[in-house]
Length: 72
Image (cartoon, rainbow, N blue to C red; front, side, top):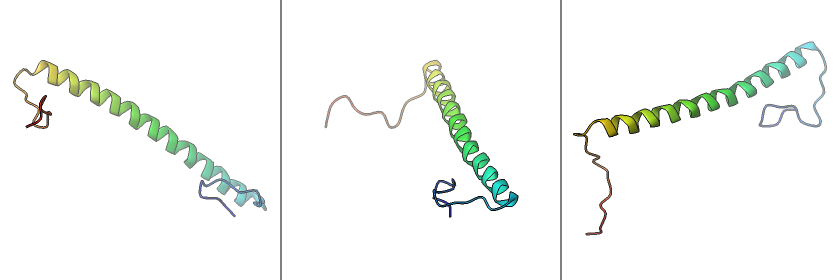
């Protein structure tokens, strides 16, 4: 029996090599997901910095969603 995390639970038994290979594949996919999340986060930071730089350099750009400094 496996838990939702893809890792074997306390009652799991590795019966043969195919079970251990399946478990190893699950562990690879589990570790791979966190690497993908980490890479996506780093790319988001790079994008955000490039976006801020582009806004700063483009003097004609107007933020259509900029909040007003006073309430109407």
